Image (tube, rainbow, N blue to C red; front, side, top):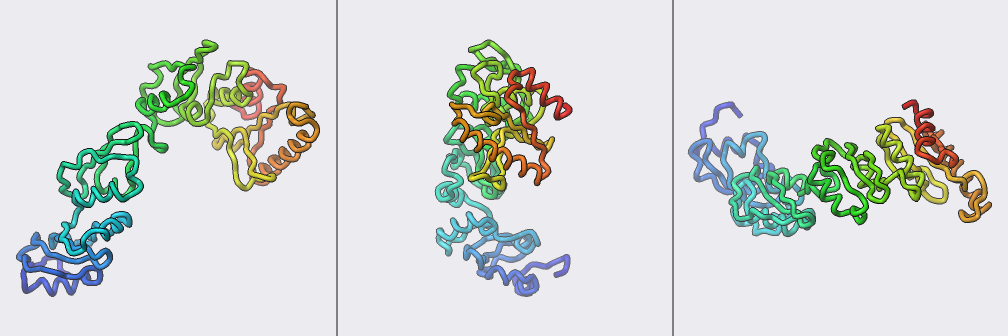
Length: 333
Protein backbone atom coordinates (compact mmCIF):
# COMPACT_ATOMS: atom_id res chain seq x y z
CA UNK A 1 0.00 0.00 0.00
CA UNK A 2 1.11 3.59 -0.55
CA UNK A 3 2.40 5.79 2.22
CA UNK A 4 -0.65 8.11 2.10
CA UNK A 5 -4.11 6.59 2.38
CA UNK A 6 -7.49 8.27 2.00
CA UNK A 7 -9.91 6.60 4.37
CA UNK A 8 -13.60 6.54 3.46
CA UNK A 9 -16.37 4.11 2.64
CA UNK A 10 -15.30 3.81 -1.00
CA UNK A 11 -11.57 3.25 -0.48
CA UNK A 12 -11.73 1.00 2.56
CA UNK A 13 -12.61 -2.29 0.74
CA UNK A 14 -9.56 -1.80 -1.51
CA UNK A 15 -7.33 -1.03 1.49
CA UNK A 16 -8.60 -4.13 3.26
CA UNK A 17 -7.98 -6.36 0.24
CA UNK A 18 -4.45 -5.07 -0.44
CA UNK A 19 -3.40 -5.23 3.22
CA UNK A 20 -3.77 -9.00 3.49
CA UNK A 21 -5.30 -8.66 6.95
CA UNK A 22 -8.21 -10.77 5.79
CA UNK A 23 -6.00 -13.83 6.26
CA UNK A 24 -6.03 -13.39 10.04
CA UNK A 25 -9.19 -11.35 10.65
CA UNK A 26 -12.78 -11.26 9.43
CA UNK A 27 -14.15 -7.81 8.62
CA UNK A 28 -17.41 -7.31 10.52
CA UNK A 29 -18.22 -3.59 10.22
CA UNK A 30 -16.55 -0.52 8.70
CA UNK A 31 -19.54 1.82 8.55
CA UNK A 32 -17.81 4.44 10.74
CA UNK A 33 -14.77 4.87 8.50
CA UNK A 34 -14.23 8.49 7.43
CA UNK A 35 -10.55 9.01 8.38
CA UNK A 36 -7.50 7.15 9.70
CA UNK A 37 -8.60 7.30 13.32
CA UNK A 38 -12.03 5.87 12.59
CA UNK A 39 -12.78 2.53 14.21
CA UNK A 40 -13.72 -0.75 12.60
CA UNK A 41 -15.00 -4.03 14.02
CA UNK A 42 -13.10 -7.21 13.12
CA UNK A 43 -13.11 -10.78 14.38
CA UNK A 44 -9.80 -12.53 15.07
CA UNK A 45 -9.80 -15.91 13.30
CA UNK A 46 -7.43 -17.40 15.91
CA UNK A 47 -9.40 -16.69 19.09
CA UNK A 48 -12.73 -15.67 17.48
CA UNK A 49 -13.01 -12.54 19.63
CA UNK A 50 -14.47 -9.29 18.30
CA UNK A 51 -12.15 -6.28 18.28
CA UNK A 52 -13.11 -2.62 18.02
CA UNK A 53 -9.96 -0.88 16.82
CA UNK A 54 -8.70 2.23 15.01
CA UNK A 55 -7.86 1.86 11.31
CA UNK A 56 -4.34 3.28 11.55
CA UNK A 57 -3.55 0.98 14.51
CA UNK A 58 -5.00 -2.12 12.93
CA UNK A 59 -3.22 -1.73 9.59
CA UNK A 60 0.16 -0.85 11.08
CA UNK A 61 2.74 -3.66 10.91
CA UNK A 62 2.98 -3.83 14.70
CA UNK A 63 -0.72 -4.29 15.30
CA UNK A 64 -2.03 -7.77 16.10
CA UNK A 65 -4.80 -9.23 18.21
CA UNK A 66 -3.81 -8.41 21.79
CA UNK A 67 -5.90 -11.29 23.13
CA UNK A 68 -4.04 -14.10 21.40
CA UNK A 69 -0.49 -12.78 21.80
CA UNK A 70 -0.41 -14.76 25.02
CA UNK A 71 -1.63 -18.36 25.25
CA UNK A 72 -2.94 -17.86 28.79
CA UNK A 73 -4.99 -14.86 27.75
CA UNK A 74 -6.23 -16.78 24.70
CA UNK A 75 -7.55 -19.58 26.91
CA UNK A 76 -9.34 -17.05 29.11
CA UNK A 77 -10.87 -15.17 26.20
CA UNK A 78 -12.27 -18.43 24.83
CA UNK A 79 -14.33 -18.71 28.01
CA UNK A 80 -15.99 -15.36 27.33
CA UNK A 81 -18.90 -14.67 25.02
CA UNK A 82 -17.26 -14.46 21.60
CA UNK A 83 -20.05 -12.25 20.28
CA UNK A 84 -19.43 -9.51 22.84
CA UNK A 85 -17.60 -6.55 21.38
CA UNK A 86 -14.33 -6.15 23.29
CA UNK A 87 -11.90 -3.28 22.71
CA UNK A 88 -8.48 -4.10 21.29
CA UNK A 89 -6.88 -3.71 24.72
CA UNK A 90 -7.37 -5.51 28.02
CA UNK A 91 -10.38 -4.70 30.17
CA UNK A 92 -11.05 -5.01 33.89
CA UNK A 93 -13.22 -8.04 33.17
CA UNK A 94 -10.42 -9.85 31.34
CA UNK A 95 -7.83 -9.03 34.02
CA UNK A 96 -10.22 -10.29 36.69
CA UNK A 97 -10.50 -13.58 34.81
CA UNK A 98 -6.72 -13.69 34.53
CA UNK A 99 -6.32 -13.50 38.32
CA UNK A 100 -9.04 -16.10 38.87
CA UNK A 101 -8.13 -18.66 36.20
CA UNK A 102 -4.33 -18.49 35.81
CA UNK A 103 -2.45 -20.62 38.36
CA UNK A 104 0.47 -18.16 38.26
CA UNK A 105 -1.73 -15.72 40.18
CA UNK A 106 -2.73 -18.10 42.98
CA UNK A 107 -0.41 -16.47 45.54
CA UNK A 108 -1.26 -12.82 44.83
CA UNK A 109 -4.32 -10.60 45.22
CA UNK A 110 -5.31 -7.80 42.84
CA UNK A 111 -5.81 -4.68 44.96
CA UNK A 112 -6.53 -1.83 42.50
CA UNK A 113 -9.30 -3.58 40.56
CA UNK A 114 -11.56 -0.53 40.91
CA UNK A 115 -9.26 1.61 38.76
CA UNK A 116 -10.29 1.58 35.12
CA UNK A 117 -7.87 -0.10 32.74
CA UNK A 118 -7.29 2.16 29.75
CA UNK A 119 -4.47 0.41 27.91
CA UNK A 120 -2.08 -2.53 27.89
CA UNK A 121 0.38 -0.32 29.78
CA UNK A 122 -2.00 0.30 32.69
CA UNK A 123 -0.41 -0.34 36.09
CA UNK A 124 -1.69 -3.29 38.08
CA UNK A 125 -1.08 -3.38 41.84
CA UNK A 126 -1.13 -6.75 43.54
CA UNK A 127 -0.29 -8.01 47.03
CA UNK A 128 1.77 -11.10 47.80
CA UNK A 129 -0.27 -13.48 49.96
CA UNK A 130 2.93 -14.82 51.52
CA UNK A 131 4.66 -11.67 52.82
CA UNK A 132 1.95 -9.00 52.13
CA UNK A 133 4.33 -6.95 49.96
CA UNK A 134 2.74 -4.72 47.27
CA UNK A 135 4.06 -4.70 43.71
CA UNK A 136 3.24 -2.60 40.62
CA UNK A 137 3.61 -3.97 37.09
CA UNK A 138 2.33 -2.88 33.71
CA UNK A 139 -0.42 -5.12 32.40
CA UNK A 140 1.63 -6.26 29.40
CA UNK A 141 4.57 -7.37 31.58
CA UNK A 142 2.23 -9.02 34.06
CA UNK A 143 0.54 -11.13 31.39
CA UNK A 144 3.81 -12.13 29.73
CA UNK A 145 5.97 -12.93 32.77
CA UNK A 146 3.42 -13.47 35.53
CA UNK A 147 3.52 -11.89 38.99
CA UNK A 148 6.59 -11.99 41.18
CA UNK A 149 7.45 -10.71 44.64
CA UNK A 150 10.62 -8.68 45.21
CA UNK A 151 10.72 -9.76 48.86
CA UNK A 152 10.03 -13.48 49.06
CA UNK A 153 10.42 -14.48 45.41
CA UNK A 154 13.11 -17.11 44.84
CA UNK A 155 14.65 -15.14 41.95
CA UNK A 156 14.18 -11.65 43.35
CA UNK A 157 17.12 -9.31 43.93
CA UNK A 158 18.53 -8.97 47.42
CA UNK A 159 17.58 -5.86 49.35
CA UNK A 160 17.33 -4.79 52.98
CA UNK A 161 13.63 -5.70 52.96
CA UNK A 162 14.28 -9.16 51.52
CA UNK A 163 17.09 -9.73 54.05
CA UNK A 164 14.82 -8.90 56.99
CA UNK A 165 12.05 -11.12 55.65
CA UNK A 166 14.38 -14.10 55.14
CA UNK A 167 16.07 -13.51 58.51
CA UNK A 168 12.76 -13.51 60.38
CA UNK A 169 11.84 -16.79 58.69
CA UNK A 170 14.88 -18.57 60.17
CA UNK A 171 14.24 -21.09 62.93
CA UNK A 172 17.58 -20.24 64.54
CA UNK A 173 17.45 -16.45 64.20
CA UNK A 174 17.59 -16.06 68.01
CA UNK A 175 21.08 -17.59 67.98
CA UNK A 176 22.46 -14.81 65.78
CA UNK A 177 22.46 -11.03 65.64
CA UNK A 178 23.37 -9.10 62.50
CA UNK A 179 24.99 -5.66 62.46
CA UNK A 180 22.34 -3.25 61.03
CA UNK A 181 24.96 -1.07 59.34
CA UNK A 182 26.03 -3.99 57.12
CA UNK A 183 22.61 -4.72 55.57
CA UNK A 184 21.74 -1.29 54.19
CA UNK A 185 22.64 -2.00 50.56
CA UNK A 186 22.88 -5.21 48.57
CA UNK A 187 23.79 -5.61 44.91
CA UNK A 188 23.62 -9.39 44.80
CA UNK A 189 23.39 -12.67 46.70
CA UNK A 190 27.14 -12.75 47.26
CA UNK A 191 27.29 -9.43 49.12
CA UNK A 192 28.42 -9.97 52.71
CA UNK A 193 27.00 -8.82 56.02
CA UNK A 194 28.45 -9.13 59.51
CA UNK A 195 26.74 -11.38 62.02
CA UNK A 196 27.38 -12.40 65.62
CA UNK A 197 26.92 -15.87 67.07
CA UNK A 198 25.36 -15.20 70.48
CA UNK A 199 26.58 -18.48 71.94
CA UNK A 200 30.30 -17.90 71.41
CA UNK A 201 30.25 -14.12 70.95
CA UNK A 202 32.24 -14.25 67.69
CA UNK A 203 31.60 -12.04 64.66
CA UNK A 204 32.18 -13.02 61.06
CA UNK A 205 31.30 -11.85 57.55
CA UNK A 206 29.19 -14.11 55.38
CA UNK A 207 27.36 -13.72 52.06
CA UNK A 208 23.56 -13.82 51.83
CA UNK A 209 23.75 -16.86 49.56
CA UNK A 210 25.95 -18.85 51.93
CA UNK A 211 24.04 -17.94 55.08
CA UNK A 212 20.46 -18.29 53.81
CA UNK A 213 20.77 -20.75 50.93
CA UNK A 214 23.80 -22.88 51.76
CA UNK A 215 23.14 -22.85 55.52
CA UNK A 216 26.62 -21.69 56.58
CA UNK A 217 26.82 -21.06 60.32
CA UNK A 218 29.44 -20.04 62.91
CA UNK A 219 32.81 -21.52 61.88
CA UNK A 220 34.41 -20.85 65.27
CA UNK A 221 32.31 -23.23 67.32
CA UNK A 222 33.81 -26.64 67.98
CA UNK A 223 30.57 -28.47 67.28
CA UNK A 224 30.53 -27.15 63.72
CA UNK A 225 31.32 -29.54 60.89
CA UNK A 226 34.57 -29.24 58.97
CA UNK A 227 32.49 -28.30 55.92
CA UNK A 228 31.33 -25.19 57.81
CA UNK A 229 34.95 -24.24 58.43
CA UNK A 230 35.76 -24.72 54.74
CA UNK A 231 32.79 -22.54 53.74
CA UNK A 232 33.94 -19.86 56.20
CA UNK A 233 37.44 -19.88 54.71
CA UNK A 234 36.10 -19.68 51.15
CA UNK A 235 33.95 -16.74 52.20
CA UNK A 236 36.93 -15.00 53.77
CA UNK A 237 38.93 -15.52 50.57
CA UNK A 238 36.12 -14.03 48.47
CA UNK A 239 35.44 -17.24 46.56
CA UNK A 240 31.85 -17.86 45.51
CA UNK A 241 30.85 -21.50 45.73
CA UNK A 242 28.00 -23.97 45.54
CA UNK A 243 27.60 -26.26 48.53
CA UNK A 244 26.60 -29.91 48.08
CA UNK A 245 27.00 -29.57 44.31
CA UNK A 246 26.15 -32.46 42.03
CA UNK A 247 26.24 -33.41 38.37
CA UNK A 248 23.80 -36.12 37.36
CA UNK A 249 26.40 -37.70 35.07
CA UNK A 250 28.65 -38.50 38.03
CA UNK A 251 27.10 -41.66 39.42
CA UNK A 252 28.19 -44.48 41.71
CA UNK A 253 25.03 -46.47 42.51
CA UNK A 254 23.39 -43.03 42.72
CA UNK A 255 24.29 -39.43 41.91
CA UNK A 256 27.37 -38.37 43.88
CA UNK A 257 27.49 -35.12 45.83
CA UNK A 258 30.58 -32.91 46.03
CA UNK A 259 31.19 -30.72 49.08
CA UNK A 260 32.05 -27.47 47.24
CA UNK A 261 32.16 -26.33 43.62
CA UNK A 262 33.96 -23.07 42.75
CA UNK A 263 32.88 -22.21 39.21
CA UNK A 264 35.32 -19.34 38.65
CA UNK A 265 38.23 -21.69 39.50
CA UNK A 266 36.69 -24.74 37.80
CA UNK A 267 37.53 -26.53 41.05
CA UNK A 268 35.79 -29.00 43.34
CA UNK A 269 36.78 -29.20 47.00
CA UNK A 270 36.18 -32.31 49.07
CA UNK A 271 36.87 -32.51 52.81
CA UNK A 272 37.76 -36.13 53.59
CA UNK A 273 37.32 -37.31 57.16
CA UNK A 274 39.41 -40.16 58.66
CA UNK A 275 36.87 -42.75 57.43
CA UNK A 276 38.17 -42.10 53.91
CA UNK A 277 41.65 -43.34 54.87
CA UNK A 278 41.21 -45.98 57.57
CA UNK A 279 38.44 -48.12 59.09
CA UNK A 280 36.49 -46.23 61.76
CA UNK A 281 34.03 -48.36 63.70
CA UNK A 282 31.39 -45.68 64.24
CA UNK A 283 31.37 -44.96 60.48
CA UNK A 284 30.92 -48.60 59.46
CA UNK A 285 34.42 -50.01 59.84
CA UNK A 286 36.31 -51.79 57.06
CA UNK A 287 33.26 -52.32 54.83
CA UNK A 288 32.48 -48.60 54.86
CA UNK A 289 36.12 -47.80 54.08
CA UNK A 290 36.00 -49.95 50.92
CA UNK A 291 32.80 -48.22 49.85
CA UNK A 292 34.34 -44.77 50.45
CA UNK A 293 37.43 -45.70 48.44
CA UNK A 294 35.34 -46.85 45.46
CA UNK A 295 33.17 -43.75 45.61
CA UNK A 296 36.18 -41.42 45.93
CA UNK A 297 37.87 -43.11 42.96
CA UNK A 298 34.71 -42.60 40.92
CA UNK A 299 34.74 -38.88 41.77
CA UNK A 300 38.43 -38.56 40.87
CA UNK A 301 37.93 -40.28 37.52
CA UNK A 302 34.89 -38.16 36.65
CA UNK A 303 36.70 -34.90 37.48
CA UNK A 304 39.70 -35.97 35.38
CA UNK A 305 37.50 -36.91 32.41
CA UNK A 306 35.70 -33.56 32.59
CA UNK A 307 38.82 -31.42 33.14
CA UNK A 308 37.67 -30.24 36.57
CA UNK A 309 40.25 -29.81 39.28
CA UNK A 310 39.60 -31.85 42.43
CA UNK A 311 41.14 -30.56 45.65
CA UNK A 312 40.88 -33.05 48.52
CA UNK A 313 41.53 -31.76 52.04
CA UNK A 314 42.67 -34.56 54.41
CA UNK A 315 41.15 -34.73 57.89
CA UNK A 316 44.39 -33.78 59.67
CA UNK A 317 43.91 -30.24 58.35
CA UNK A 318 41.28 -29.52 60.98
CA UNK A 319 41.58 -25.92 62.19
CA UNK A 320 40.56 -22.72 60.44
CA UNK A 321 44.21 -21.77 60.06
CA UNK A 322 45.22 -25.16 58.62
CA UNK A 323 42.37 -25.30 56.13
CA UNK A 324 42.94 -21.69 55.04
CA UNK A 325 46.64 -22.39 54.44
CA UNK A 326 45.86 -25.55 52.46
CA UNK A 327 43.34 -23.81 50.19
CA UNK A 328 45.50 -20.72 49.62
CA UNK A 329 48.53 -22.88 48.87
CA UNK A 330 46.70 -25.01 46.31
CA UNK A 331 44.48 -22.40 44.68
CA UNK A 332 47.04 -19.57 44.64
CA UNK A 333 44.71 -17.06 46.29
